[in-house]
Length: 82
Image (cartoon, rainbow, N blue to C red; front, side, top):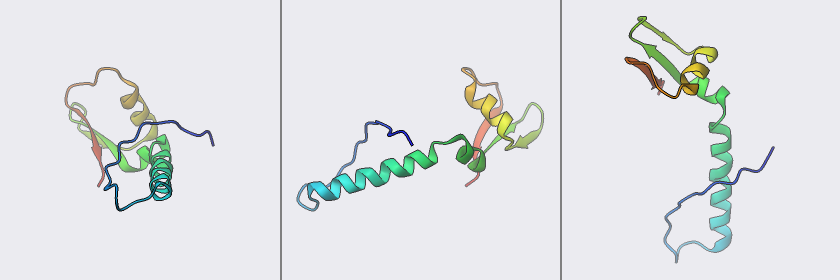
């Protein structure tokens, strides 16, 4: 898998952690974000509520279309299933 470069802001107390512990924490957070940022994961945890058509769906094709739009339709909501 390609290594992702990203900026992370992590607030820690300086005196509680050494450099190795900080690097380990940053690696864990980066690995977690790599898993969560996939379309497969988003399709499992998100759904689209379209009030215009009176439907709620979590179909992958519909979610991809909604995420790809630059302007969202009125009364169409992306909802987290949590």
